[in-house]
Length: 593
Figure 1 (cartoon, rainbow, N blue to C red):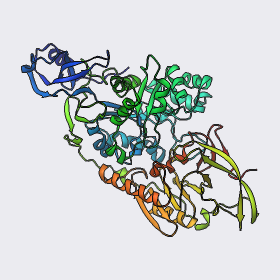
Figure 2: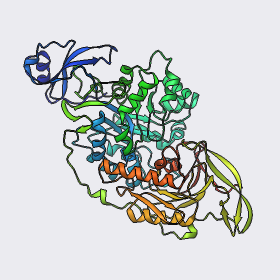
Figure 3: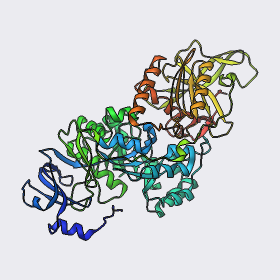
Figure 4: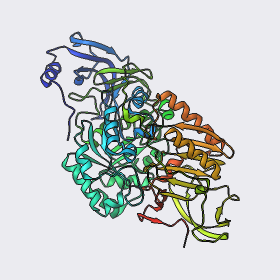
């Protein structure tokens, strides 16, 4: 268990007793007690960034001995929100620009897993994310990536992490845990790599974050016995029941791609106790942060689905702090850190004021505390190091000398146009001059994965139910290996996208059949923009419209391609090494035998 340190406990004691002047008092509040579930009027006294006293009334007594008094005018006072699991990189914003987007929406702490940048540039990238997140009017706590690469032997990334990396990175100031242990089969089977990393986390007093989609019964028990005690990959009602019953922290997710809260709530709504329900965003892009919100939106969605407001707020604050083992965060009570929000309407949940460690940092949706810009040399490094490709490299050629006729191919097929789960279908396709021809099947597309870390690995295959691609879409955001992936109907369009991504240092690019249409440059590790949250959001929205113009009319066309490289999400995905059978943890041939 951990505590956020006080500078002078004796001064806090004196302030609690009223013997010295407190820095701040907030009066006329509607106080939600997260320990009892009660709501009552209260005045909150704060000193040196900590709550020192909660007076269960709105009496004026004691206010004369306060440096500053804020009149909440009947607004609810609730703790600052904590994101149980997220990746800053998925917002396409650098840590400091991310802070500007989420603080006004009530997020005062995030538990962030920088495994996206770690898969690109290793330890140096993790240290960058850590250092760039310091000295902000919010906390960006770091979990050490456990999955670099996500599944060894099935993909090649820009680095490899082992227990020695955990030992080194554990010394960083804001490191708190071992990030989502995505190789859940490795945990269940007790592989040396996963056990040694989990043991390294335990000896460094880090909590262990999980990632275990679809598992139940003895497999889920084995995963929990292996060390991880949390999960954010719950998509169904039955999964939600199973994980809470197993004593795991269930991080209900509402991201830009995965909307899981409704299904989770349906599974657990009749449970008498839900003390291990927590909330997270996982992956939210910049435009969603600005327009829809961050953790305030997750709380809002829980309330809309039927969770009582006080419990939804607990799930987005106190439960998360308990999950990561911090004992004085996530509530407004004596001895707790004074992160809090003033909210007029809990159902809409738009904070009027945001306080971090007892100081106002945002009001009415805008920052009032400065975020000092900082430059880092690593932000200027080009991480796109791919092999030169000719037009014929984008063709799917038969492995034999057969020039015409038909051949059987293993085709990953999305279950629907919005989700990330795929099945595998063995299909027969036409060969023309030694190349697979899909011109008569508009639901089918080619996909190429090109290693971008200086190796010659590449894979060309087919994908079905991806969505319309009358041209090509390519990205260097490809969870979690982040090699370059391009989905296309025409090799000429794919080559244009490939060249654009090489030139700009990574990002997302779209081509029509005849010409390049737009490129969203993300030169920081090929994952993030160095522009403001507002400019990045605007460019992202324009890219969505461009993708829709070539037929990709999914719920989130910008991030559709991201799901195609997820070798830890069932059931079949692509990496630079080939076609991956996720559940069996093995490569299978593109061409069926």
